[in-house]
Image (cartoon, rainbow, N blue to C red):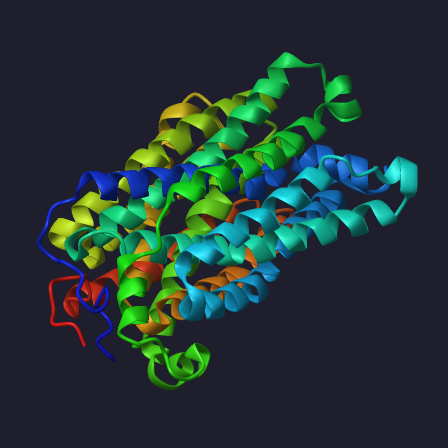
Length: 439
């Protein structure tokens, strides 16, 4: 395997985090939170959108499958936007693509809040919804990898895992904003009002927040790693994608497996579970949304804890502990919720905490590639894996749950088992980031 664990030409390894580092991490995390809110708000209103954008005579399970299919389309579109933006990010600069991605996210989100429903324009409604969702996917395809590269190239090398964990925590905070919005609307307005016009509010708010994010990112600077490569004329001389596929396939494999773990931890346990518990376990919508908020707060704590710990003892060991914890706790949680909801809140909180593995997944992926092709390597691996795993997972889970009620729990347990093996491999190979000569 190629040793790609270098931040760039002259990144300081030993210096502590400074005020400028904290500002960069803070603004990046806040911007990521607002943008990720735009991307995930759809899933919190999946049942409402499904009833408004598909024929009323359609069976509930099929409507849910169709709705999650549109949700999945956003993931399928991710590689397109991600690969294109990564190419220019490795050639023209990280910050330019960091700004572009938010514009591509804000406009479709705003339009989604203005779309007519099936009752007004028939089958054109879900088609337009699908188109907007795919534009969102193209935007987020460049956003998440670009943001992880951006923050890791700003901070000292020994804080790589913590840097990616703060950004992951910010992205999760975007999910929390979506959960708060769904919970607030559930209690603030009647169900009739929600179906009449209330469902539009979170999308319109999301579009506005997108432009707030754009404003915030004006205060960020290009990464010192890219600036130095530009000055030294050490940018990739050939197409970054060609270099990646020729020399760094082992790194691609590691990054893709890591991304698969992330999809299970976020898409199933956080984004889909409230709807699954409502539709198939018969738990009250308000209760599931409240519990989801608690789980997301614990996920943020778990992200930061995992990142800080990984910088001290290594990504591999932390990945083993997190995957084992998530696989076991989510299986028991999902099984118990079909019989007894007494422990809904504490168990979901524990699931969220172990989901903190999402904080170190990007660190593992970022360290797999050298600076000259880092954006392309991370974007290609992350987005292709997310398109397959994140895109197919909602379909697999919702179509199989009728015949196998525990399918979400079995799926998460299976993926986390792969994560434990991967963590042991990383720990054995000392794959975690340490100070090494740049080359």
